[in-house]
Amino acid sequence: MLGAAVMQPEHSYRTRSSSFCKVNEIFLIGDQLREALQDANLIKNRKYHLRTYRSCIVGKELVGWLVRNKHCATREAAIDGLKVLQQHSLIHHVCDDHEIKDELLFYRFRRDDDTYMKDKDLSLFYRALELYNGLSTRSVNIIRSYQQDGELYRNAFQGSEFVDYLLGEGTVYSREEAVILGRRLLENDTIRHVTDDFHFRDDSRLLYQFTLDFSKRRQLSEVFNYVPHNRKRDDRQTNTTAKDRQFQFHTPKSSPTHSPERSRRRHSIGGNSDFLVVEGDNKGTLGNAGDDRLRSMSGDSGNGTDCSETGCEQFGTTRSVLLRHATVAELESPDTPYIKQTIKIRSDPVGYGFVIRGNSPIYVQAVDPMGPAAVAGLKVRQYIYSVNGVYVLRSDHKTVGKLIMQSVSHVTLVIMTHKRDAGM
Image 1 (cartoon, rainbow, N blue to C red):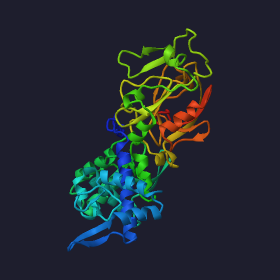
Image 2: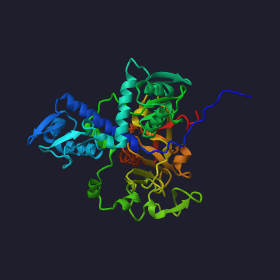
Image 3: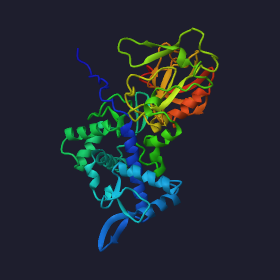
Image 4: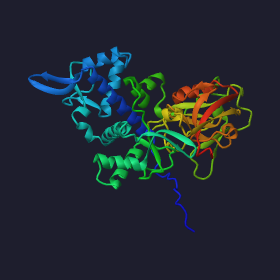
């Protein structure tokens, strides 16, 4: 019996980390800064020793402009922010002889001398920016709102119309080449399927969205949201090494002699478990249960990502459990496929039993199947929206860990779950 073909979701491609999302945000911050400097007439041709350097800016003028226009609070912060742009190949010294300095040196955005094309990710970003600007024009009107399966998706476009546009503009020579470009954009987290179920296809039934809000104006200081914390600063605050911090538990109001670490035992989950469950040994050596109910660990995971743990030991692997990293903008969007749920977790004598990870947003990396969090219904890959009524979607894992540690006997979380994982 013949019938209509049913599209099967594809999940194998969604294995990328949040790194591309963060890099694309840095690219966009740099490009918007370049536009602002052009509007301020600070990017222009300059002469030095009878030689003309085109489309450049003086380092000292740039830093001063950033502080005056409140992009950064201090000249030192402005330098640090510009160094992030330099590290991501957005700006460079005109002769590539200096890093960013608050001095009378000439710098140029790589977009203005086409050297950005040497960086594949940056080149793809500018391709995406040009496509967004073209697709968003009223004359084209490809990006618009769609109603599909009872859901309203704003600022979306059909896969087939995207392909038609590329062919019409002459930027590709075939539909197959257009699909390849669409897949590259999706794999770099520049576009996404509206429910994250399909790779890019030349299909009118599939809707896609740009992951970046290109219209939102950004400040240079926002680059610090997308780079690792300063490890030197962390090292000055503690004498422990990064490896020590990875396995160190901080127990509020508990002494080393009577801490839960002294009385836990390890149980492997299955033969090839990714983590170990931590429990008390029921020998009455936990001390004051009210003081020792929560254990939390915060620190560098060893591969450039941060995590916090409550009630279970560090994973045997540091790989993220996320299939695809959602941004805060996606989670807060009116069209988000994520739904909110409130859960209340009561601690046992040794903690809550779950691991959080990430920065803006934070998500659940692991749940102890024998712990209180699992009983309450907490699951991996859920994003944490609030802790005891405090909004934390834009917070880092250390801040959220401290909020959880303030709760002695129970914690109330509002979590966000994808409709697909929630069974809806």
